[in-house]
Length: 225
Length: 251
View: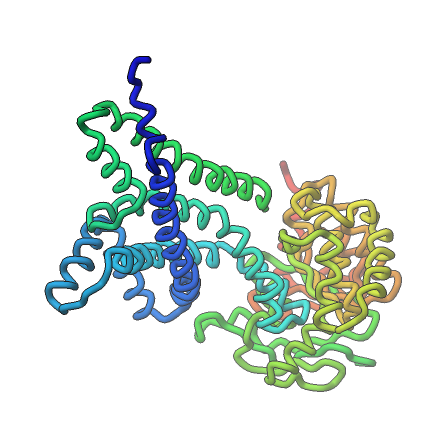
């Protein structure tokens, strides 16, 4: 039978290794997302507040994160921190720090815009029914904020998972790196491996991100107010 | 004045600290009375209602409910708002809750009433305004007139001492105005105390026990509807009423 290159997937534990790599990618994405959601909620509330100085500082933070490529941030934390502060942090820790730094800014901005998009009248009709501030936020403002937030937060999660592939460049062995190792190892006896391996990685990312993105648009439709 | 339920003494309000939009307003409404406030736009009608529902801080003066000045304490303010119902121009139902949930929210969490009891009362009120079959739908599925009727029920179920209606038909299509005003007319018949800001002059004539003409932040005229609409005393009121009188104007 002619060599199609596909068998590289089933040689030894190659496929299992790819899945393990995928798990590392997912783990980095999910942990960073978890921190980003918690910190972003706080940041968003602060950004929607009235204090001008704090708002300005948040703005600066947000702009820095948006302007800087995540890769540069990764290098800065992984290599820069190690060299200048003698901090010995693993690639995975550096990745979680950077993605949380990035995700918090994005999430904060999403929370802020969801909060300020609630019309003033929602507050007023709540208050005029005699609700206290706490009752108003718990029953009226927060549920609507979450509704508006959910689709874009889920969207951020898929971006986060995709972006974790950058950690390859600071030596974290995730799904892309595993693929590269497999390709390198079978360079002589299977020169066509690259297509099959990267194709598989493509499908793996698709299998993870597509349902999430579908979920996001389904939520968007269902929660439309 | 007889049995004043809600009263203001020297109420003054400005948004910039300099130019008052309400100047020294002395106002009083008795239990069961319906007062309609009319006046040109920007005269302070809506601001007056917003002051009465404590959505705006007042610069000076006093608001008294059943003879007692309102405390500045948060608890007092919530207690007061519970007793003063407010319906807005833009309905402002809570979009994430069904009609029924919108209505029972405040009685259950503010007044701590039993859910079953509140549910029953809500259904009765919804039936009265012809919305019982809509109780489980979300506000976005309702027409403007239906939303406004639901909003009225939401205020009514709190058993307010006074109901404030702020241009409740101004955002509605003409054919829906009637269904909403009909509800208000019935409430008036039943003796609900109401302060109504409206631009519907025929409605004002029909519903009011007393008409207040507010102009430039002052009470310019205060009359029975018959007197006010037949022979307004001030020039300003005459001019204002003429703008509604299409027949005599030379179109």
